[in-house]
Image (tube, rainbow, N blue to C red; front, top):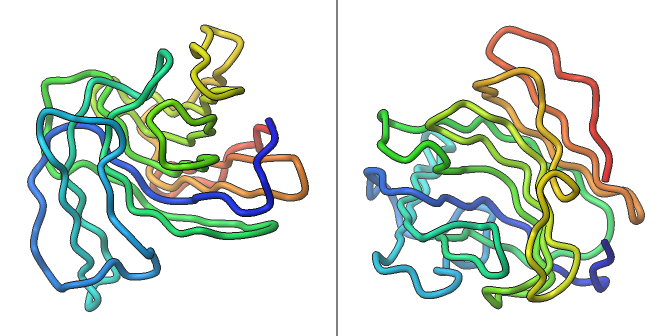
Length: 180
């Protein structure tokens, strides 16, 4: 998967969950935006004291050939490494609600992307990608599932054209890396 030298990196959330309004602004991120046209608009807040993001969003999925979700985003260039702890504030009804890191070629709903996600309902931790604009994501060719469930920490790294995802559960070492 190739992205132009400038691309979007951010945290996303797809499911309905409470969001705490803490402070104005988006922490290290530039903007908060709904991707696609979800029936319920998302919202986000940054709690500077606890260095925590509270994100609320909804949408039908980040699979198939288009996406709907709420996205905190920052335009960046070159290599990067990002790490965060992710959790859902409460149990949900949707098995595939997701939260995690995403790299997108642009903010269109059908953009090529790579996501490193934790699925809150069934506990899956997955690297998934859309190889080109408007393409349907394929199962299993466009995904890698980690054997551990209920990951807490997700790290995503880009070095040149290689993306590496690492995960860890509470009080356990990071998993072996998965590359794309």
